[in-house]
Length: 73
Length: 271
Image 1 (spheres, rainbow over the protein chains, first blue to last red):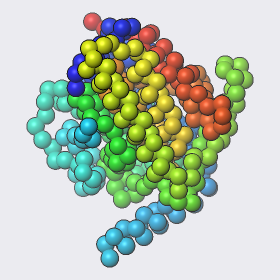
Image 2: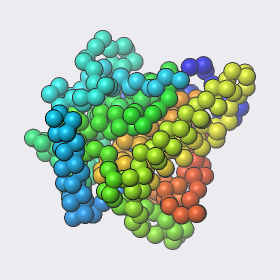
Image 3: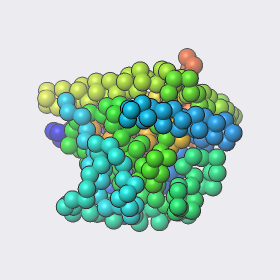
């Protein structure tokens, strides 16, 4: 891929991560830690209620098993 | 434009091979470049670092993996998220697109090494799901509500739309390069924010949507010439995301795009 230039940004691009405070190399422990923490934390609060969820999950698994069984038949 | 081929399993994992994903992205351990080795080592340390923020979310399907404690499960998924995001970044730097199969491969690559056959499939047909969303007025009148994801029947079409939007953004960006012109930051951030919010709004999986969307967000940012952005947990982030996820005529991706740009602008290059 060609290198892209920006008229309003001249900082690091590519394998770096911006944390809101620093820009860190993605292949550093600190950089990848920032990514991992962000991904894990931003996923919170999006899970369905337990009862509804469990029923739906079981149905999903049953359908998946059914599809697998059909494919293997 | 070729599809991204995420080299998900060329990096080291603390997860044993009998639970590796059985999709086209599953690879045997190979020779690691220095760059990949750095990311792999970082991913494992990152898993330790995030343990302090372990979420006791018992209602989550991905709360406890077979043969693991909840804490071990959290740590294992963290390592997988870190690695998959890093490999998505490497692939994005090299170009390529991001198809619907890649969305599912990313989800599987994160969760199958930990949950094996108990990894959840994409929702189907009549299967519906709801999730939390922050609406109202920021910052003083936030409303925590629930919203349904789009129907399982409509999911394939929505995911194709998201993938097509990405492809169009990539092609337009590459065309600018071919003309020898420069980009604006917002032109890269807008499509990334839009795709991220639409993916989460669609909610293709029963669980793990945020962790799946995060590598997609950062693939897009890097593919459009920028860098990865870590999004710290905050009310403002969830409100901005809610504005993009809401399923009414008031939906807007601009608050999330501006929030991502603020994070970028407030970050200082080290060294």
